[in-house]
Length: 100
Image 1 (cartoon, rainbow, N blue to C red):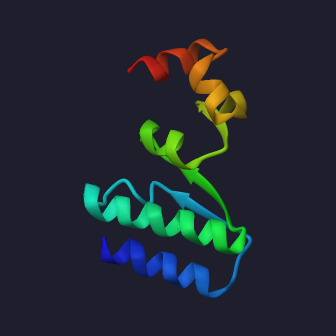
Image 2 (spheres, rainbow, N blue to C red):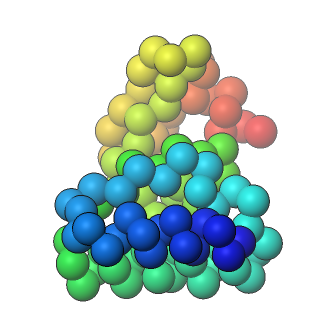
C-alpha cells in the first residue's frame, strides 16, 4: 500500500491533467483503498484532475467513474456513461462481465 501511495504522490508532483491508474488500487487492503479513493476524488474535485482507471473492481468503477470503456482482448466492445452501461449494457461481453 505504501508503494502505491508513494507512486501516486510522485505522479502528482508534476501537476498532470490526467493520471493513469493501472490496477493501482487492487493490491490495497479495503480500508487503505477507501482512503485512497477518497483522496483521488478530492483531488479531482479540487484540481479538475482526470483519471484513466484500469481495474477489474466493478464496484470501484461504478463509484468513481463518469465514463466507461469495456475492452475484450484489447478491442473496445462498449463505451459511454458509466451508469448507462451498468443499467443497460449493450454488448454480450459487458452483460456477462456485469452479471458476475
